[in-house]
Length: 313
Image 1 (tube, helix red, strand yellow):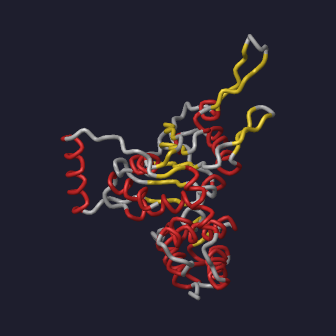
Image 2 (cartoon, one colour):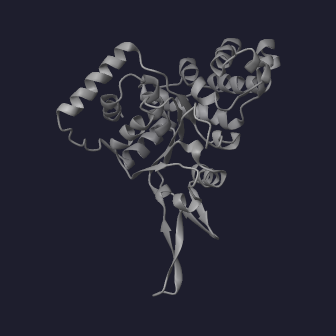
């Protein structure tokens, strides 16, 4: 994973949280939704991740006229055999980059939902298994509303993490200029993969052995419970949250914190790991109240308050 991280860092300036969270999601067998303004390297980061892995990769540009069959594949009639054969679509690759996912209509989103959750797709009466190493990296632009379809809460919940990418600092932007100039003044060789699918699956099994004591599990459950019953923890929090996170958030936190501990070469999970991942794991699973919107309270402020009011073990 160290070599894979270096490959991504060689192509992405800054964005340390994005890089670390992508690797955590890969280790935790989860999918990622990346949101950010155009030009903030969302697609580049996803491509850099896949470049270092010996796996099949496909980028799908989501558009309003996309059909489920464009994603899944279709049955084709063969005259020689007088029957239908299934021709697999791009969704059967190991890693899928779903670019501008919110431009796809509901039927396409539903097809992707089944693939993400069940690791299989259904065509007619037949189900087809997806690869064991399967990851969806989706991107969306927060400012464009025309021709977009908001992702339903049910589908948002399927993403392990929701990562918001911010602007680079002035120093980082200068480094981006240097990187761009260097790329134009020399022919860049395509870097070979540094890890295989089997090595990633072995790493996932190692992640599952990372120790987490009962107090940490109680802490995670308390954090998620506080999103559902905020009044028991804080009056202000109760005014800000309309609906809390499901048990899927708890399971996501367990898997992700173990992956983060393993990635940082720690032998057990600490409260710091939990707090580091609270925002990307909970931000898309909490529905803020209308009062919080009127008061200008962001989801970041809500989660920050949540971490303040829930006791740390």
